[in-house]
Image 1 (cartoon, rainbow, N blue to C red):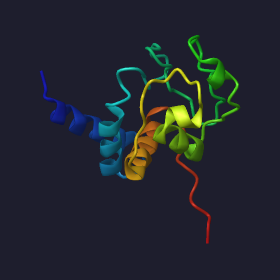
Image 2 (image 1 turned 135 degrees about the horizontal axis):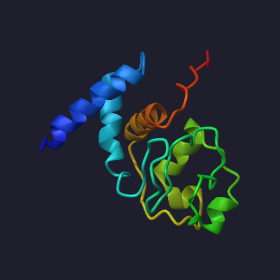
Image 3 (image 1 turned 30 degrees about the vertical axis):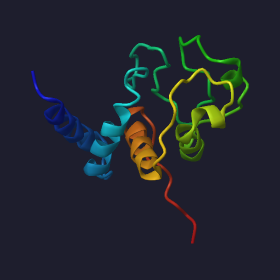
Image 4 (image 1 turned 90 degrees about the horizontal axis):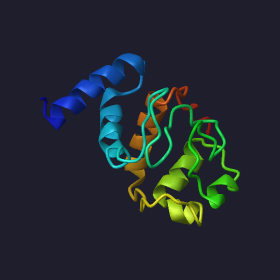
Length: 137
């Protein structure tokens, strides 16, 4: 059995081969942050739902529409959210503040840099295209 550090390194290597030019270190750090989420969510296409929905294909999809997941709160169903980096960042900071009445018990991720790492990792692992480049002058 391999240790958790070795597993993270192997995951980073695997991700770097599929993530193109994305920074492998950032992805490995995002994988580390995702450990907080892994008890409730899966990432891969066709993987089962857990307490929370599988996250494959979430970017660009309306909230509360993951295939086969039926335990969404009324608040999430009525939120009108379409997941993109900005919406996900707000939600991950404080799910209960972003969507009052959500069933998600997770308290949130306070550090903006950890949310950035996680979002980068989620894009790489859920079939999303790379984030659009910042076009602000």
